[in-house]
Image (cartoon, rainbow, N blue to C red; front, top):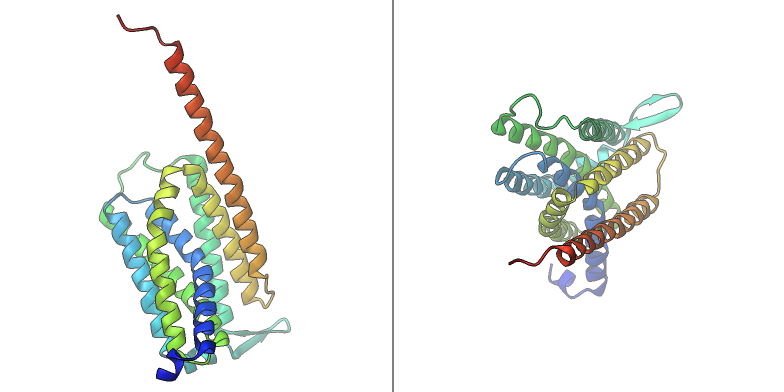
Length: 252
């Protein structure tokens, strides 16, 4: 352990793996932010905290069973000339769940059905949000830990990187959730990202890897366009307010 603290290679591995874990955690933060936007405060904050705590627990628990994780990458059956492992099956199932969930949310947003026609039990809504977070946490945790295993051979470095990444995810999740809630158009954009990420997970499960750089570049580009859109909306609103105040009659 002392050797790791004084090793430049170990610190370089920690920084690299932490950055990678944070990037992989972006998907998780977006998913949790979209889900908790459907339930009121303070339940939304509690759900976000529980979801990120579970993400940390799942990652550390999976790190403690490294040999089992490595075994998940071994083929268990072959179909149409392709060998599938348990990891592939989990990624396909998780990706399909993500696509289905995001598509359902997009449909609800387009149809504007939320809050119409029936009351939703807050306790029941909270329970189902947590259940959905658990499902997708498991998928993202598995992918994250397999990446960590490939990047480092020291369990201490893996655990440290996962803890730091989860802490950064926790810090950023609040602002992301508030931003999605404040600007509803960004929620549709986030849902589109989740469909894209779900497709990438399914493709990975079928051994058709889509470089994550392409996906994250597309997300960054779309977010930049949306940022300019929000800035333009703010400027138009300020201009209207200024014009309204200048044309209002003086008070007697």
